[in-house]
Image (cartoon, rainbow, N blue to C red; front, top):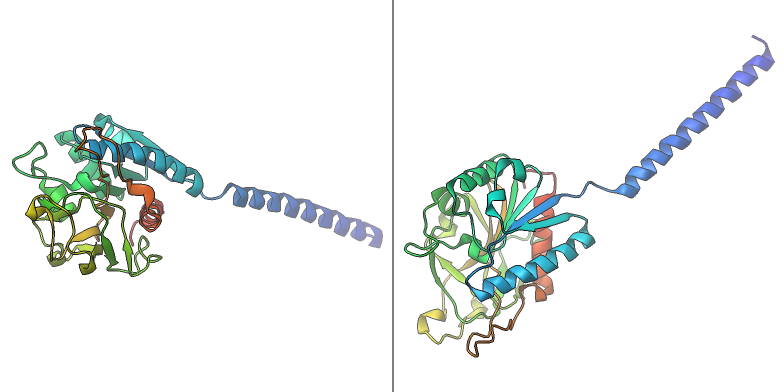
Length: 288
């Protein structure tokens, strides 16, 4: 091979390298521009009977789509609980219960399988409610005792009022950017029969700070809390889940207008808790 031929070969190799490098960079740039694949969220709701819960569901179904655009995830919602089956749930990385929980045994089995297989869940307020006797009896031990850990509902404050919440764990993804204490949106706060502090699987993230007392306005004396320990946000270490007790708007029942007097998603710091929690649930890491 002559010197001229060797030069031509080197030039050709250089050209091929440059073309290959150019197209490789174009692919990398396109992938970076596209960003990560968005996770999908499905929210189940009932939105019946209690106007405060109905108001919250409507509010949530307006707020979450706006957050989905801002934080790049996909949000769907349905009131058809028959969709709580393995085939349907396989399309989604996160399940939300906005108010109630499934009553049908087949739906319950599908949800338990989904969670045990690595699915993620966010539950609001009434989704943890269970009381025997009532329309929502405690007849699902895995969900209320093993998964949530709270057991049956015991009592609540009235009327819906803001509380000072204390962050119990500053390292958790949903709470790491919150101040030590902050004021919540107005809410009806629940008390549970089980002491979550005694459950090694439960990690309490937020509780009601003692500076909140007395909490509630009555008129019944037992609807006003003067002392005690009340967890309001927690996770189960064995699952990718988050329960938040918020989700009960204040309603004008007295004048029978059913007008919404307060909104759950009106509080910036509380919203930070919820969206950071959802982004953690939607992440690919199956464990904390």
